Amino acid sequence: MARTAAALVDAMGATAPAEVWVANVDGRAHHGDAPALWRDLLRRQLLEPVRWSDSMTALHTLTGGRPHLVELGPGSALTGLARRLLTPDVPAHSAATPAQLAGVVATGWC
Image 1 (cartoon, rainbow, N blue to C red):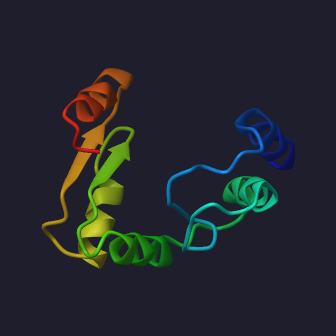
Image 2: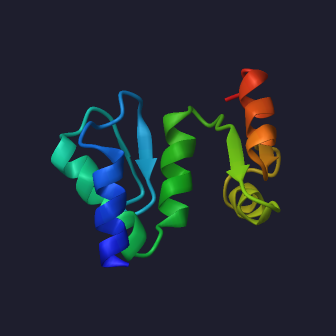
Image 3: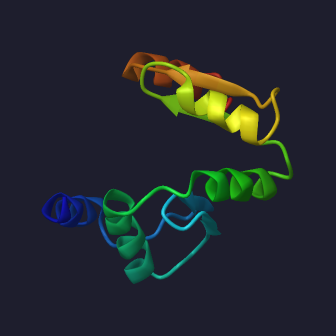
C-alpha cells in the first residue's frame, strides 16, 4: 500500500483544500494547513487505521451538531454507525453511483 499511497498523494497535488475537512487518520478538523501536512495526512489515510469515532465527533462539533452525511458506495453501514454514535436522526443520503451522487449534489444538500 505504501506505493499506492505515494501515487495517490502525487495525483492529489500539493495544495490543501480551501474548505474545512476532517481527516479520518487523526480524527481532527483541518483548515488551511500546510501542503506538507495535507500530503502526509493523505498518505496516512491509506496506511493507518481510521479513527471513526473521533472523526464523527469532530464533524458533529464542526457543524454545530448538525452534520449532513453522504455515504459513497452501496449500502448504508457507515450511516448506521454515524447515527448510533451521534444521533439517530442525522440527515444522510447514500450514493452508490456517479449519477446518484450528481443527484445529491444537484439538490444543494451537500
